[in-house]
Length: 276
Image (cartoon, rainbow, N blue to C red; front, side, top):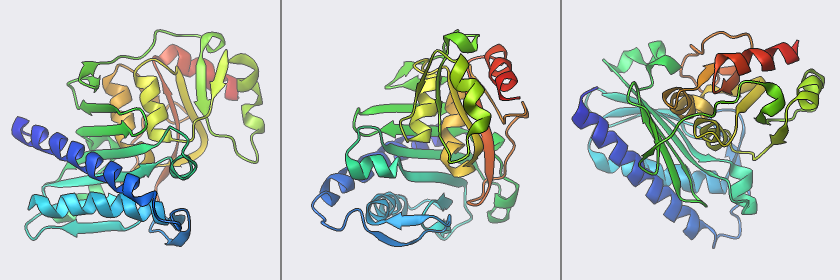
């Protein structure tokens, strides 16, 4: 992707983020904000607050005059523009919906961008093709972004993962499920745990060294990690599934994967050993 296009799309990510954030402030006046309006394209309930966020993002994209394919949580996969699409944008307009509804200060937006040769190339796009990533935590105002092979930044400053190599020194973020017996050994060995409820933002915490591990053993949607996985890698971290395989999942609403994000292979192997 050419430098001018990288800058253009990063700027658009910022505009989208601002528009979504402003729409959510306005949405606070809606008494039905937390109501479920439908089942989204991803098969999960769509709340009215999700629609506010997604519609605000789409409005910006329509105004660009550029052609793209959008893969988004509620609306699914749509074409915007009349010409051949130049990119695919993978977006979670509201990362941490429950947090946003309850005013817990950890929610935001996640946007990943991969170049497209033609409209029919979408089926070939995987996480490895993501070139641009943008995540913003609305309550804190922190923006994280990365360009492939150019590093990761937070609010314009370069970030990097921690140097922690042992589980006993690690701060780990994960998601608890009804059946989590495979996690008992992890809980007993890591130094501390945090659960914030916003996957993209929490993976960015790994990228900047606040967390040492993000782990999901049950399968997270590719949509949720498309941006943050690049940010972690560009910050010097390691991303794989829980079997140490590189993530090569297709960009699809229904695609899921287990995931472990760590600052280095040694810590990853230590955590995976504890899962056995």
